[in-house]
Length: 174
Image 1: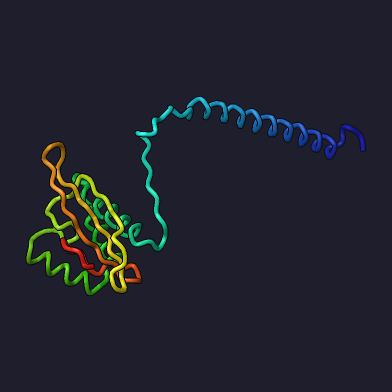
Image 2 (image 1 turned 90 degrees about the vertical axis):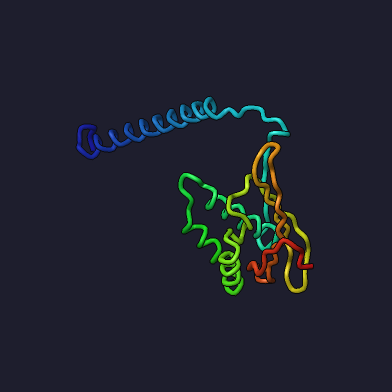
């Protein structure tokens, strides 16, 4: 086969094109890496400023923290509260018979039964309170307001062994 045959010219062009592609990709990656290094150089963060959250699947305190965090986010977006999400979260986390009792309690008391309030807390903490009968109790402390005008509400949340919330009260179940 001579150098001027179409097959030979095509393979030569293919080799040049492949070499160009490798060079372009190589330059692109190295340029991208150096650009990312310049853009994403992390600032030094003090240990006091570092925040973290963790959880474990199947753990009562994690389940309650997940529920309250998502529920408060859904209710607390004052520009656009997400009532559909709040309802879906209640359906997912609350035992059906407790959801009915809670709705009746809300009708009687005129407040959100999950939060035991008309408004949304500024902060909350969730603490394990141990086993109670066949369930598990978790303490949710809601902090309303800010600065010197804060009010705390302590809720005792009882989960059945299948991780559905079966009661929310202001007194311990244990």
